[in-house]
Image (cartoon, rainbow, N blue to C red; front, side):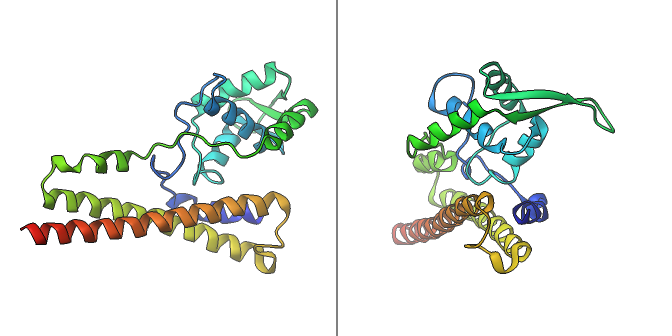
Length: 222
């Protein structure tokens, strides 16, 4: 798959900051938006059989620009999905290392995924730690505030650079099919990458404007 090749080529550069992805830190087994969304995302990823480790790798690559999940969240969610009959797990003996459970989506799970999508777009809570810090920059002097935003700008530029590398690698791997002739299971994921690129570029631009204003304010009042 071209998508996988592209993501693999850029994986070592990926830095999924807590203010870049929509964090799933609170995605547990509750019936809240985060918990239910995590389970549905797992159902979506299980279009092909996969282990919990395989799914974690998908979160760290294919979904990293908008969602995060840890193994400590993934495995309990898989157990609950299995208990509900939405997925089925089977132990597979590996050539090396411990045995792994390979999960696949059941017909009931496919119906649950389709029902979730049919409900329309969901909006989840977003947390941007750097913006929370920016809110309180009056606790610093102007020079310190400028250095804070400079550091934030450098991080946002790196985030954008990584996403651009993923898109470029994907384009090279897909060739003439990129992007509008990609198969469905790559085309729609690519749309989310486009969204990630747009958001990352907007955050870079905002940091640049904020830094300019802070410097001007410092000079005007200095």
